[in-house]
Amino acid sequence: MPVILGLAGLLLIALVFGPQVWIRRVLKRHGADRPDLPGTGAELARHLLDEADLQSVQVEKTDLGDHYDPEARAVRLLPQHHDGRSIAAVAVAAHEVSHAVQHARGEPTFARRFHLVSKLVWVERAAIGILLLTPVVFILVKSPVLAVLQVLAAVLVLAIRVLVHIVTLPVELDASFGKALPALMRGRYLAAGDLPAARSVLQAAAFTYVAAALATLLDILRWFR
Ligand SMILES: [Zn+2]
Image (tube, helix red, strand yellow):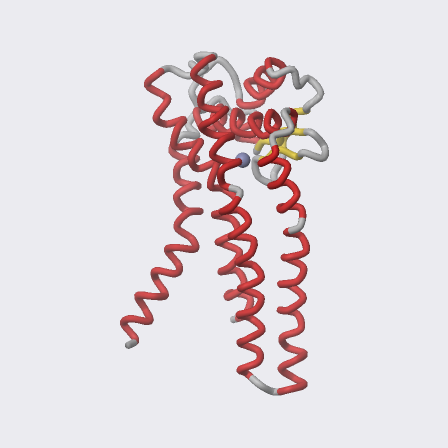
């Protein structure tokens, strides 16, 4: 029995952390400086945005992870992708620009996703609320069963986040493979030999949110301990 529990635990950790480790490794492997590339991530983003007639969308540097902000209409890139000249920088920049294009074209799947994701703030608040109340309930009722149930409830609430990001994966896959990859190929920004690397970076970019949401689930268990 303990062996099975141990294996189940390992499987859970692999499932929860695996995707994030994979994404980090892909970005690192293809993040090496490539002076032969025509520009940095920010330069390519600017170029692709102008080409799509999106001069009003800004390209900014951030420490909060690569993303497109539909409210500020800004493509934000990590310093190494903003200023870097690497396959990771170029592919991530093209991916984020694709979200700006989805937004500008009023693609319904993008709108639906934006709507759903903006509601996730409440999901997170509910989970934190449940967790903060756990010690209080424990003191009042002195029932460990109830405390465990509360933590499980918080995990279930956060599982909604994972679900939302899985359901909206088509938006991410379209950004990577419906728009970014064709744009990179059309403009010949990368040599044919670099396309497999770009493909894996684009795959990683598409799964970023699912991976992050999965990792939060384990944060809860750590908090509980
Ligand atoms: Zn994306």
